[in-house]
Length: 170
Length: 190
Image (cartoon, rainbow over all chains, first blue to last red; front, side, top):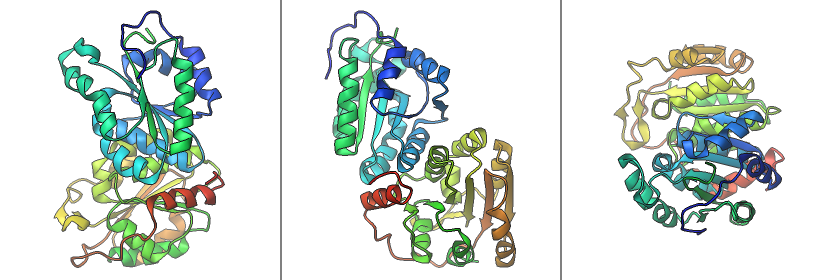
């Protein structure tokens, strides 16, 4: 896991997307969250972002893209991880289909609207249960964590998650 | 017309090189038993996502024809995929839905496809063409035309709920092997 304290300073979406592309990611699909709003805007500006209707559908699209030779990223709020578990379990993990999950961490430290508290508390444990490697980057570790995620995905052919905490892209 | 009979009319006409995404359940079993190729991908889980997988493949590989072989239970579980396909409008994606009005592999419990015209939903979502056939004669006549229709195109094939029990053996390929062989077949690496 990355740092656990309150984030100081914000990462810039432009260099972050540069870093993703440099690591080989070339297919971006998702369902939005305000915590990654600037990242989606940057992807959209570059003509790279495909909006989906549901997070598990986004995972299906990402799986298809991988089968076609692309390296996909799925953007989602952690609420969407709930509807994604069957796709992750019976498609990606089962078939050895990698995918970078950019999952926002609403409900982080219990400081959020009530609808986010249960998933916010369970998020890392849920990923651990599914044996999905994950890190929660800070601005200073983001570059290294992207490289780590890309290496894990390629080596293990599994989904890997970066948990985007409030303030990272504020 | 049973699922196997419908596939028997369709599968031999699918051009070589076409990537076929088979929905989970009996569509995969019957599809694999009818005509298995390297470019065939059979879902054994993730119900509802065949069309989404097909969309991702069609967008990633505009040089390839992609055919999704779906079922009514699958389409109704993830109707958002129809909207996403209609919106993205990949010109290389054809979508067939075998509609037996039931979840055959779980015992034949009814779906709601008798009251929801799925091909009309597809059309409303922006598919360039959609249609429906209900007899073997109509399917045989439509197949060659359908694969040449402007895409995304949707064909609902009304079939009978067959006798209880699976229409073929389980898909013999390991899931990871199916990933590897499809990626190899489309030149995407192992």
